Image (tube, rainbow, N blue to C red; front, side):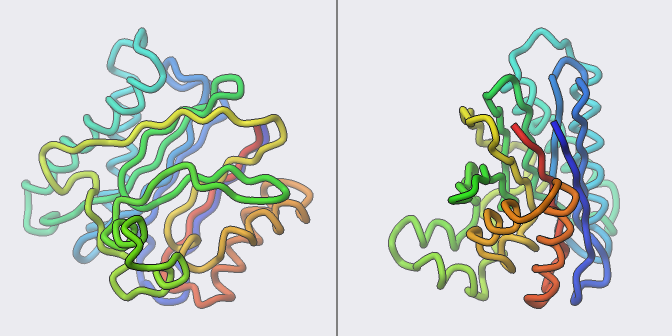
Length: 241
């Protein structure tokens, strides 16, 4: 596989509250691992929450027995990271109220195993389309599913950042788990909402088709988000099936 990831603070925010991790090599019993997290909270709390969530996620994988299935390990790591970030939020005023999204996946053959919480996203990108594999845990997404808003209205809605679920906000959390069977040649794209709110998914396919490699895909997508206003931190990981 050919993986590349990068992040940018954007044009509006002072701090970059996104964090990411990727490895094409095995990670503690998983064949590979890709993670994007988008933090939230008070001054610098978001960047602490997202980076610590990934740290705790990987700690679970390294310390827990590796005889579980891929999905059980991914979901278990989110549950563990949630509890650790939540308990950290209770240790000082500077951490109060912090939380983060977290979308993680691991590829085994052509099966992509996904564990997800929040509104960061994972897409399957082909020359003709970009299919969202995760479902946003947000008030706006609930309104879209209920037919109260169109997708275009949702993209510009002032409350699009309000989450119904996030990691570290409560002691217990339920993560979503998905398994997607993907065709050879598909690109998998993980991103924070700094990309998905700034760039429409059809551009993912267009840029991916026009680019020579995944490093170029990532850089061009981030540049497009900046060109469209760069209203939030933007993080993108792309790898091939």
